Image 1 (spheres, rainbow, N blue to C red):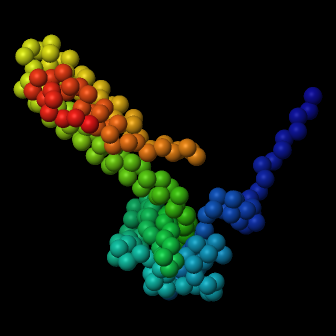
Image 2: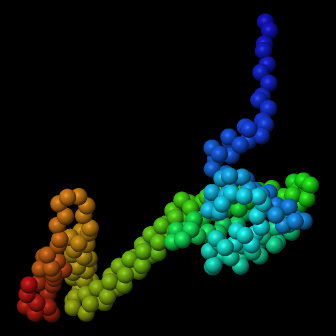
Image 3: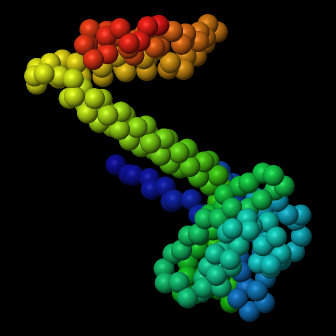
Length: 223
């Protein structure tokens, strides 16, 4: 029996271009002597600048977010001294719109050819927005948990003043915490065509229900 061996395809410039476009990668090169940066068409679109010949960092810096400019300038100047791969994320502006770009390459003159270094730009706006949303959600959750703990602490203190036994305290505190849970369900946002607002009277009635039979509070509040 004879077996046929298929040689792996040889990658050429066209193949590399198709792969880069599929991955959303913009290619750039930087001549360390002339300080000129050459980008492909995707790179110019990514930066929002008209396509022309080589540009310089200063040409591109006009689009960099003011809060990131000094950091990016320092990183750009130190690129050749970085040992191994590097990556820096920064913001660029298009009027009122903002986009996150990740610049990646090899430092320490790794892979330098004819005094030219190579790297890529990636649009990481989606990832950054997801990270910001996650941080916002985590911060909101932390804030709410702290508020709930504070409420539970106050309720425990108030309940301990009126309870005569530990069993009474456990019973009263449980009722009051459960009332908070029912009140939370009442004011929780609802979605859909039939959105109903919670009535203030209903909310107060739920929150005050555990106190109706408590001697210290009985008869003091009516809804």
